[in-house]
Length: 195
Image (cartoon, rainbow, N blue to C red; front, side, top):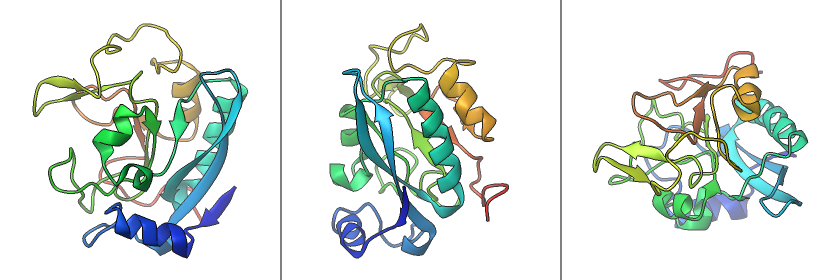
């Protein structure tokens, strides 16, 4: 289900610093997408992603495919549920989308950022870590850095990769390994084919 950002959610986003001055996408450009996803417990669950309005339909189609494939997702909550803190969200193995990061967090917001524009998704960060060049370490953990098959992991050519690619999304759209990350292009611009 696609809906606008409610006043209550917007107030929480502001209070937690998930949105602040300088973020390129505002309340009018963002949508709340509530989805059913398969869990690691073998049961369906409901989750929410906040995305740009121009990718909301695409995100809905992608996650319907992932549900049909029974691809497990640990949890799916908006970033304000973690105090606007990307590191805390990743440590919780939370899949998220819109993230207008604050200074000091990786890829702090800019007009070009796919996450700050709501046109990026990070999926199962613990199973799909990224290489943080600031410390030459894997975030949130190095335990699953090897790209070998496993529950919740993304591999080139697999069902997750195909679901996003079919919609025109790009996997790891940066020069360093970022296995959790899909976006619609950098710098972020309106999604092709959107209304």
